[in-house]
Length: 301
Image (tube, rainbow, N blue to C red):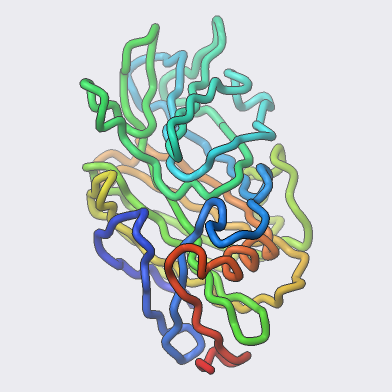
């Protein structure tokens, strides 16, 4: 059974060399690159998909939701079902940081209720970052009412680290990260395999609860407070190896909350294809890191 591993505070954008005991041998991972500097095709906009339930635990009915993520440079296939009262967001991008503003005339999320947002992108949301250059120091996720901020939301980022095995297969690892100044309790983190891509409007926490063979991480984990430049990170090895021609998708879900106020929470589901993670591993040399070839048992070559 997998367990959370706190791997401390480190710079998100630095290439991380993490030594792990998967397969009984030390393995070296390379973190995700958006566009391979060394060549190769960039990922499609639909490579990574997310659906997140974001709760309004403020004292107000909120009519705008603001989400800032670091990593994706293009977005598509938004969830616009009945649980998203705002429809398609307005997106503002500055380099590798994008803000999605969800708002619609006459629409709001009542206090104690939640909004469900979803999108697909060309990169993992490796960070959910605060507006450090804003004089109001707005958080990564926050609600507004009539343009005025009324409360922030727990926000967790993630990235993939991928080992390329000697036979062309991969061993993936998920890192959850906290870029905020507040500790975050990761109450639950599960992963599963889907034989085919799950449509965005079906990539739902409740809808998939009994539909996939979820494998749960043992115990809770807590992400210490971090910053945009030095987030705290919990590492989650996926206890499986996948062949390079595997047509399936990896799905994971998380439940994150404020340890002091569990009503301030979000829960999310994410999906990526095995082929996309194979692409990441093969282009790893372009990130400045290296992969370590291993045999089918995880031993280094």
